[in-house]
Image (tube, rainbow, N blue to C red; front, side):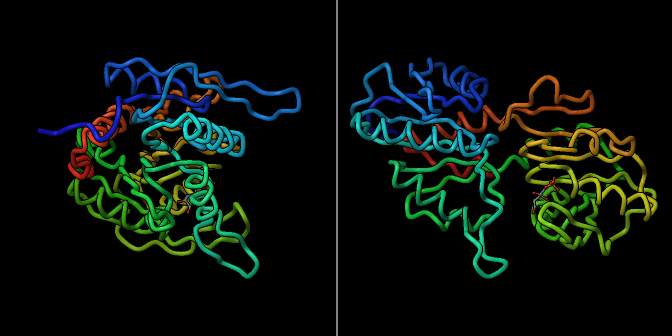
Length: 317
Ligand code: R5P
């Protein structure tokens, strides 16, 4: 019989996405643990857990979404407090792992922030990491503790299958998205096209080539992140120039929606934008065409399985 690893399962949310924490708690049928998170007058973060965590199997839910530094620091401080409170085990549940896009040096004298964050998490007390759609899989290797890396792709595939887009084509908006796009194309039994983009500035890319047949087809673009939506908008430009139907479906796990993102996603060639709730979208940043799928059941089931020492790999398929 499966036995819990250590102590009782205790869930605590940071302030980055409390609604997601509530949904996860509801799925698991347990209340969230009580904690206080406040600021000192100078902006420093103060955390206190209002209940005993000694020996317990604790999970701290905190996507490190904007304001990234605030949410990251809050997560670190929460884990520090739990470690000093003698928690039996601490799992950092990071539905969106910020700073991941710097996962290697592309030029001399650059940082590797994905690695720096990994070191900070472990130093603060993380015994395990549970995350969803890391920007790059190799970030798992930045840790010497267990990392469970879930994928939202099955959620998108199930949703899109219902639409029965027989004339669809899955489009990788840049070469970094090829693997994920191929997996979606296989699941939907649709062809694949790839757009190659060239980076011409820190947040600016331009399409240079498209490989695959898109003319007369309904494009489905799948991304890990929509930040400024520049990558997606470039893809839509390239698809329009190559005769694709002006009814593009865009999927992305993490909806940062910074800067000009809403204006870009609002363009009429984009029919629907399907994202998950790893990052909360403020009501004033919501568009009618945005559909939010909940990642809570997936994360909750992973938490349950980790707690019960059961395999998590079934959730990857
Ligand atoms: C980059 O490699 C990522 O996979 C995304 O394509 C990128 O971060 C999206 O950013 P933006 O929406 O600003 O183009």
